[in-house]
Image 1 (cartoon, rainbow, N blue to C red):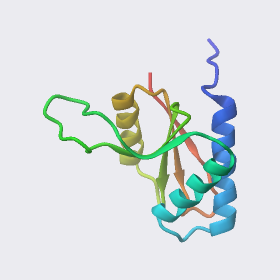
Image 2 (spheres, one colour):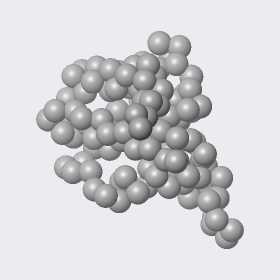
Image 3 (cartoon, one colour):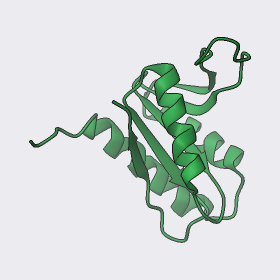
Image 4 (cartoon, rainbow, N blue to C red):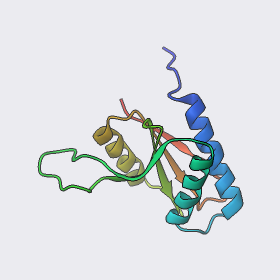
Length: 125
């Protein structure tokens, strides 16, 4: 059974803008720097986005503002920005948790600290 790619045009555009930022800023900036630059590009490209969005609690008793995503693009894709030596399983689990709490289906994890950028898609079903 062949599955269709979720949001192919949007995810392609997001990844392209990430590559543009990585080429412009290099690999040794902070997550906030990359988020600032991406947000500016999203504005220029008329791509709707929400930055530092607080998700609703995912279980009874969870405090508010516990799950804060870097960016939600077009109310469809969660973009998690990293600037660290290596992305861990916990980073992917964090993105899955965000997807579950938000009801979104696709997350993209991008580690700008790598020499060669390789965005990773995270699916939630």
